[in-house]
Amino acid sequence: MTLLLMAATVVLLQAMVAGINLAIPSLAGSALHPTHTDLVWVVDTYVLVFAALLIPLGALGDRIGRKRAVLAGLALFAASCVISALAPNVLTLQIGRALGGAAAALAQPATLGVLLAVHKDNRTKAITVWTAALGVGGIAGNLVAGTVLRSASWPWFFAVFAPAAALVALLTAALVPQVPRFPARTSATDTVLLVAGLFTLLYGIIEGPSQGWTSADVLLAFALSGPLLLAFVLRGLRGRRPLLDPRVFTIPSVRAGTLGVGASFLALFGLFFVNAQFLQEVKGYSPLRTGFAILPLAAGMMVLSAVASRLGPGRRVIGAGMGLIALGLVLLSFVHAGTPYVWYALCLLVTAAGMGLCAPALTSGVLHGLPPSQAGLGSGLNSAAREVGAALGVAVIGSVLNSHTSFSTGVATGYRVLAAILVALGAVAVSMWPRVSAPTPEAPTDAPALV
Image 1: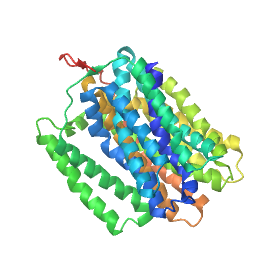
Image 2: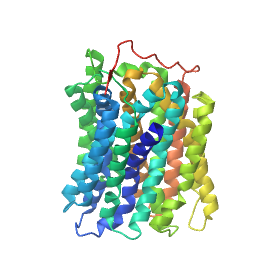
Image 3: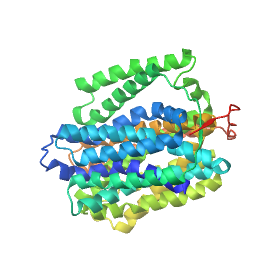
């Protein structure tokens, strides 16, 4: 039951990331009268806050207790959905979205920490299910949005998530066992530097395609992010108890796993960003049909994740997985308005097979390089790499689309560019991967407290 509930939590949090895109047309014509900039921030605020807070709140979850962090995150997520659904103006909606991002950053790293504590004897299974849930969440978001928006307006998209989160929280409180709590490192200064650095970096990446990469706001964001992140790294090297010691990246599996996670989700979220638009604008699908049309992604990820768990986190598995993702993107670049759905579904299955193969192995690499007492922080690092990669993927394909007058041509070119970037980064990640996987570190000898 713990496995199911933690996976359900991840699916809920990720569904909100993907599903909001289908709600934008309804929101654009609503009584809130949002501008284009308003709509961009309705979508991006959740992702920005989520990504910026993942590492510090992952460490906080280790400190206050992972089950407690999951419950607090689900409660805040439910409240954010209610605020968003009842928002009388755009600002309130954006505040609700920001709270949702913070809730996701608190709960998501803790879910993996709970799973690793409960399934000590089968960490591979826990990681496999958790990574599969990340991908399934994106599919679920499109299905929920498509179903709800078929007969209701945008507030109902947010409204349906609130009772779902409340139900998962109640079941978690009743059925998930207590897990160890560890005195994780926390630092207010480190947190401020990291959050501000990641926020400005992601702001520049997200706004670059729409505002232009040489616009004043984007250049200022990049100019601020560099010194902030550099200061964070220097404090980590010199501090006695830093939030994140940069020296963890000297561990080959952590370094390779972080790069690989970022690269694979760069490709996947670049696909997510334009795929729903392509199906509706080019293929003429309804939102509901669009949601069901991408189900092969979920099926492929779940099936191949199970296969990957038996193969282990080897270099060949990771290389094959990333190669399949790139191949799937190239095949999708040839899909057009007249392409039969069966061929399109096969292209999605190839892409999903690649994600299912490499994602669990890459996450294992990050976590195996850190002690169990830092599982929440490791999960936060893994998820932060994923969110930064996702933002880069959206920025890359957004920039390609802006350079083409034809949407279909822009999508095709964008998929090929994403595939090329993935192959290049994937080759680097595989080359850094240790030839013999490091054993899972033993738990600290200090007796942990229970929550």
